[in-house]
Amino acid sequence: MEKCTLCPLSCGADRDRQSGLCGVRSLNVAKYYLHPYEEPCISFKNGSGAVFFTGCNLRCVFCQNYDLSRAKRGKDVSPAELADIFRALEEQGAENINLVTPAHVVPPIVRALEIYRPKIPVVYNSHGYEKIETLRLIDPYIDIYLPDLKFYSPALSRRYTGREDYFEYASRAVQFMAQKPLNMREDGKMLSGCIVRHLILPLGARDSMHIVRWVRETLPESVYFSLMRQYVPFGEAEKFPELKRKITPREYREVLDCVLDCGLKNVFLQDAESADTQFIPKWDY
Ligand code: SF4
Image (cartoon, rainbow, N blue to C red; front, side):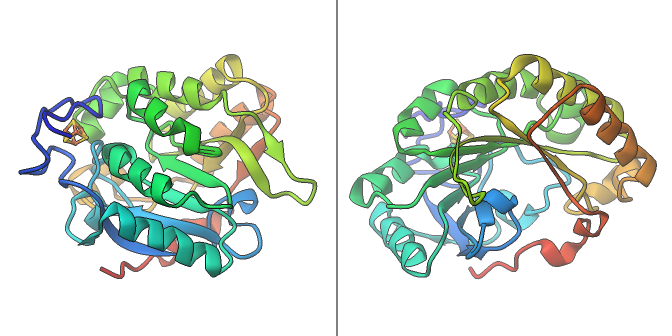
């Protein structure tokens, strides 16, 4: 990761010496545990073996994992130690290994997967703002892609991340991820495939409907769509008047109607109660 160009920011940091715009030099983990609140086919019975990496190359102002994305928490781990974490989660009964926000640390994660390849599915859980060249490095080890598709409008992504090329990169990344073949076990556990997530934002219903239509028109039917209504004001949301509240039932209904009208078949929905900070994990490091 000398002159790092792993992600679309291509900031060129020499990560042997310093962190890049993503905020970390290498692997740094804030928590790993059996996470019960992913989609039912991911958390399934025992919970998903989530590993939360700190740092982020997208840094949404409303990030629900704000202290992680700004690298305020966490401890450095080596690839060998990350491999030990994979083993520990597997021994605890994890349904899968869930790599949360991995785009800016793909090479050391690949080294960990070379040291120990889990016998359970490996999930790549990301914000979608990434390069296909980087995804190709880790793709042979990934069974399930779990990307966000956050913004359609360049103006909206510029407002909340400073990047107006979000959809340009994320739409290409998601099309790459969507090629992962679907294997859903009869009892409802996903063994391989792709689930595209979208979080509805306050005043964001129109943008959300663009995303829904794009998913329907562009991605194969084997791809699942997860419509998220869990937004709660967090991070720097106080600086943005429209972000200071949860979404309204009407905003949710508009987007849900769009999902139903355009005929998306494989869909996950959330209860209104999901918009609660109690579902945000407490960090260990
Ligand atoms: S992954 Fe981090 S260091 Fe590398 S280009 Fe992106 S922001 Fe810069």
